[in-house]
Length: 416
Image (cartoon, rainbow, N blue to C red; front, side, top):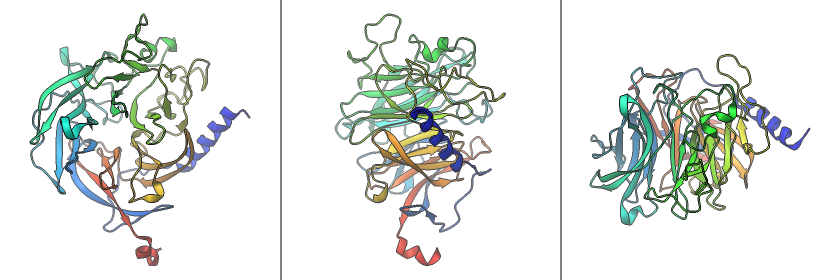
């Protein structure tokens, strides 16, 4: 067996062992202790919100949470403020029945990230679906000054050219934001659910004249860096950093190596984790591990092909990957340096023990508590996760943002 096939079989067996999704989202029992290989913890409700998506923390201790219908909320000193942040741009949200498949991925307000020099410039970045002509929209990134619980001088620094497949009912918007140590801004763009049929090489994710299925790299004000890989090349948009993605929902820089990691949704099976290298083509839909939703038939030409970069890790079956971080805190010292990945359809939080760019082991930390949309580390080293509706997908239903609270093992030893 080749090394590549062996790696895939290992990932497949690992994923199958981890499979088995709870039918409906559960609520933790009072005082319930979650026991894992290295740490025990409880879940503490921080706030109940409608479609909570992404989380960020200000230097002053505010916790900012996006609600996908178009609101940015503040948790201050443990209390959810009743009034959303003022001054946000108009957001196209397609909830309340305007849904496709599971109905929980439709447009709206998405990521929130602080500028690396936020403490001095107060700049805050939001990804959102910007309304367009005839009720259609496109992903955009806006920035504004966050002061006195409002945004001012809000301007778009990026508006995607990523057309949908003829309807806004399609999902796959992407919209994850991250800054590297040099201050460059990275944004993920989904493929907008264009079907993978006929000539797979002509799919929009393979077309350098659209932003569908791409990662883009920008200066913090939206200008295009001169050293981007497609600058000056004909028939290519200069913002593009990588191509061939389906729907990247998680993105994080390794705190030591600086490597950029992304995860993205596969179709029926085949979620991927990729190490992002400028100019590389990650293959969607030409290569991959997924199958057609309705027929179960193969979509791709194969799992590997010359000229395309294979994933560093796959989840088969899919877990519906979402937010991801590298944990660097001390409250869960045994997880330091590990990757934490949320799962939506898999309703789980997964810990990935890494060695460089390789995954050594996976452990499910939480399962069955709902569609996990984001995971973030707070300034106190605590871990926070957002739950975006339960598997029934009731629109407008309030769902929790949880804090993971460590539990000393000595205190729970008698309960084992």
